[in-house]
Image 1 (cartoon, rainbow, N blue to C red):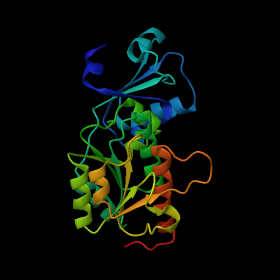
Image 2: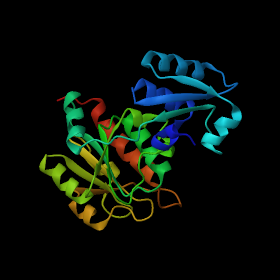
Image 3: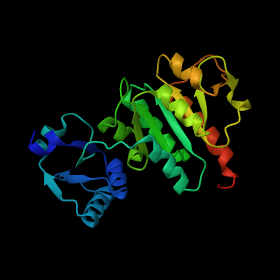
Length: 254
């Protein structure tokens, strides 16, 4: 690999790259595999030109050397490494939108596909920002960007040292913290999800860690009516986030 790829990350896939360009992410260069055409490619080239991002064509062999067996849809963008923000910036985003804070806290989500799926849903549901721990968590990498369908380009992500302390900090700012519980807790159908809120989703196997769970204002479980008694992290998160979104649909802005 050349110096460019060794000092930068990358985004593959047409839609994720389009979203990254629309969000004005710091893209250094875009490579298009020779012979790749279509409306999405034309859109990428147009947006890149508008942003002053160089676009080059690479042979199929050279392209494969850069991406290996990754499914790329014939286009690759080299970007600076993911930039994270401070927790306070997530609250600033909510204030700028004149909305009660709506955050998603992910307690040790280690599967990048789940992280990407949760970020995609969060962006669609109107979440102002996502919080992840600095350790024992997937980071914003190529897989996350692709799985999120580019949503990560539009949603701020904060990395914190201690999730439990972050929960306490948010509660001190009058933000209600609701944790997703696999068993026990209130039913989602009976839980008030209005107002300033942070939803906590635990890891794929263990759920929310005990100390974090103890700091939550309320624990909520999703009712099950079939023979399977659990949902994966990304689905649980989606149901809770849209539970919040529903309460905000007819609510006035602050």
